[in-house]
Image (tube, rainbow, N blue to C red; front, side):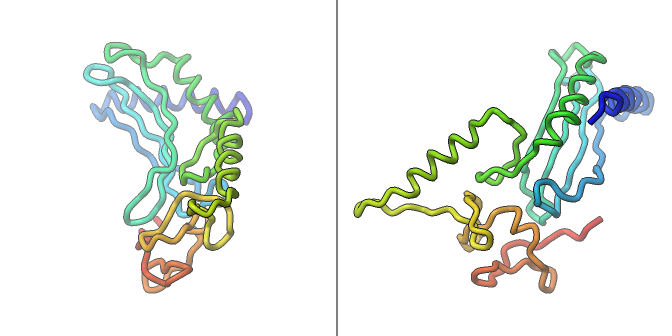
Length: 197
């Protein structure tokens, strides 16, 4: 992303804050046109915020949730004012916009725990390697949970209500049958989807 997009987003958020204050509506919530992240579709991506520092911290946030009838939060990135009495400065809003456009969105990945993260520090890789090591240990007194997606065989910790391992990437690509999503293993209905808006 270019710094011009970050600057533009900063100016638009400041402008939105002014418009909301004039109308005495202090909460911000808008659905963004992002349909897929890291192969996961059926997402509800929102830009939210609270733009009045009289009674609560002022903040802006980017949120990602699944678009099922029981939405699951996958990710939240937030920038908040330092105290309830202070407003977010232009620099803080710029920091939120820059980090969102330059670091968060380009690096957002689905992790094996079913959540999304953008960190590039390598901790997730090391944790994955440790879990893989323990998953390969064979001892007669141990029973290991392999935690592989039933469809793509990628490592995952998410399971359906019927207890089959299924990563959100594959889960989000299941085809509806009469408004329900059947489990790819046992065909039991695992969730109903909300219609696309």
